[in-house]
Image 1: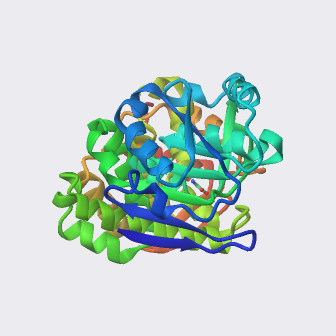
Image 2: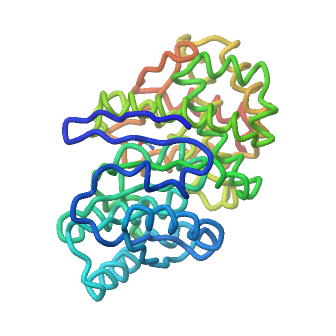
Length: 362
Ligand code: GLY
């Protein structure tokens, strides 16, 4: 079991990573004076596997768990779903010291976090991430949001949790594709922030791929530590936190394009990281070896580094829709492993050239 502290001016909290953390929630939660009930926001599938263990842990702390079911996947991140949860809280007379617990993947964490940030102007939140992506990234750092029909994450708030309980046992039941999607985020930390993690994965990724609990604990806690340090240095996303978007500029653009439908977030981000490395190389910031290391790592993790991409002009159009677009596309690029910087004004010609090298249609 490992514990990482996220130290922030508004209050510190711990990220606990290990096996059996759910059942032992009682020992890992901070002091919660006056909390009587824990409203556990979750979906049917996650609840089937993990509610019972968490229920035990919460009861061990004298809390009464109340399950609030929401739809599976991205559908949960919608204002009507948030409204239904608010109404449940009102009917059940939740009070301001009661807990909201997000039990599930990134979408549940975002929705439950948003409800916790806004209901009665804020209730304490515990994140209990059950996917690799959420354990290494989304559950830490306080970003919460719901989607609008017009775009993803357009309505949200910063609301830091009081604890993050990352039980790596929950990763054992993840479908392969979902697990691989999380591996792209692990690769992001290794490439953009943690050269030692990269060296370990290059030497042997087999224990991680086999979901060996000790390896999962080690990798998740390394990534969580990297995330914690970034959030501490830039809680409100005005500088360094942008590094966590490595590979996400192309990744998000691809997710937005219908012709690329069916790919997971991680698959899109993996391609985005290779694209970023190719841009670095094209601009003379990074080397060809940097591109090759990206490709080798992603292959070792079972992720593609080449694919049939949509036409370059469609991708350029999608870049302009990015929330982070301000008069030009900004890319996080690497000078070397672990050395990221933000680059603006990359020419459309270079973007086209690199997309075409990676397999963009005509
Ligand atoms: N997932 C990116 C961030 O938390 O900033």
